[in-house]
Image 1 (cartoon, rainbow, N blue to C red):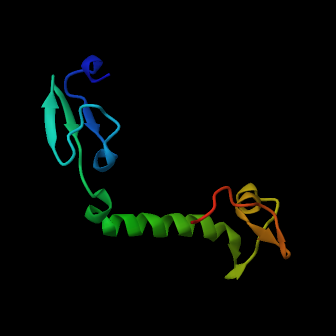
Image 2 (image 1 turned 90 degrees about the horizontal axis):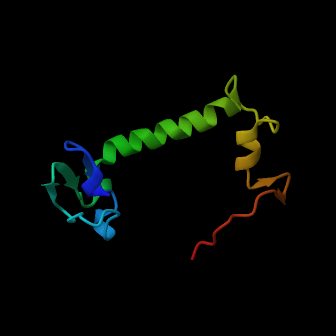
Length: 102
């Protein structure tokens, strides 16, 4: 696949630490192969703690803010996001988790 890419293309293999998704990835290295830059960064989460926290907070805010009206939690069960993200409602399980935590 890399051989068919145009010169100047860039591959950032986010899975480099666990073997990578690109056969030519060298974990921990950035190098050029036939004009294609291949980066294999390691431990990405530790390099972005502040932006990751900000993004998570923004995601939570965007998820929860439509559920709050005038400072009060107001769940509209006709809203697809609310209805499909609830695990329980009125003491009953409405969505079973698809995976078990071990």
